[in-house]
Length: 611
Image (cartoon, rainbow, N blue to C red; front, side, top):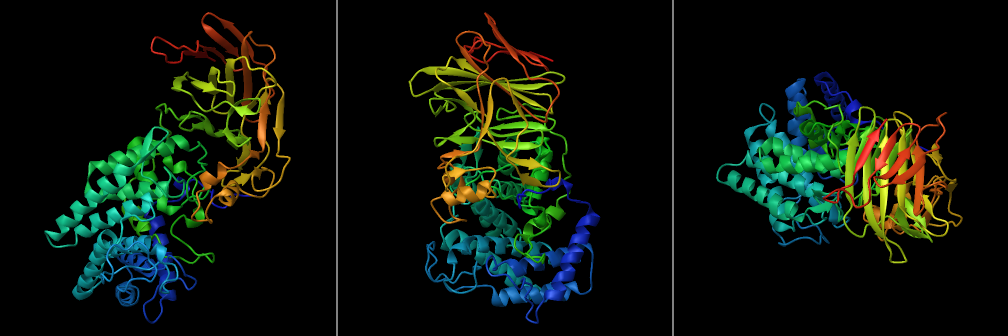
């Protein structure tokens, strides 16, 4: 079973001027065939996300008129723009809309669903999107539309802005991407308004960004992020926010957007595997956007010097939004416009800088959460998620049914690289059911193809084991598919277990249910509104790799050793010795000396490594 939304890396899509002109030519062909006598460019099957879609196609036709020329386009732009202004601009309050601050304002807005009162909750983002489509048309209007039609569009766009920022509560869905998009619309609109109106709109847009978005950022993995649907980051909408930050910086020149975009880009870079797989978020746990992410990933990848384009997108939406029949949809068209207009090229080389929340070399990578517990491991083409046991999730030692991975104190990290190896040593204080404070030292070493993990701590009684993750997905090149198999070697006994019980609270990686589906089934609210991350945390147990302790280790220690990667002819028989300098680990590929848990004079972990 393949994951529908995790397809090819976004930087694999051709982005030459010729490739973009071919995309626009296809859009023009479809649009001119579809246009109704009234000038409507909506896809015939479009029901929701509809209020901005015809205008979005209009903006693409306007861009095509600039780039490829076609004598049919000026008339098509004028007719389709007239349709939007006549039939898709609403001024009567939508019955049931819950977020109005001013009743009967008569300000224009766009509807998520055309039928009055049918589903008004989506009117705020639909209006923000319509504003963006409108300012794009205005930017490209020269020679395409008459002065009176342009003036009417300016009036409607200004009304959209006022409805979004005066008549309603700002950002009512607590969606960072929508809020930043609205700010971008204001910044672009300001260029088309007479002064002092334009200056006032620009100032208000910057004020909203600082006071309503930036001031409410949420911290995750050391980064401050624009909140998304009640969470810190969503792997579908987060990169869309990055694209909005790129456009905000492009059109305003304000350094605040560059700084915040750099921070979000570094965060994405750290949480993303080398193969581009990611999952998690408060809205769409496993879905990835496509072209909506390209601008931000490309723009900020170049700024921070990293290959963010490895991000696996939904390449069915590699150019623009489409319906199931492949027909172009104007929703999100503004992002394709900006993507084509921006000349930034892809940065295709990984960053050489060590990142606290990531270890990456070659085809192997580990992403760490805020507690420095692996959130995703990639090795040998397989992606491992944290496993669940007794409602506890993560990677770490388990004793008496209790998972030791949540820190009780400061987590210390040491990164080290040699010519052939990359390593990260994590020292974490933890407390078990017995209330005894223990220090776990976890060493992660990779040569770019294999990952060695050694976990050492004070002796654990009973029959402890290392919860070593859940094999979940595998990379077959152009797609990511489900798997329940793993190429893992262990210096102790190794078991791949599956839940004996069935039901929504148990996840068996051999089933056809995806992590996203299981997470939404456990969420408190319906799909599309519930928080899949919150739902997934309710999972009782999952498929899990369980690695037993190494038998021959220094007295007073429990040690676990696992090797992830493709099957190797080299036996995995690591040895461990302890002396006054610390714990020496010898494997077939390296020798490492892990210093005492007390660390150096500043308490930082000490590590030496040689191949």
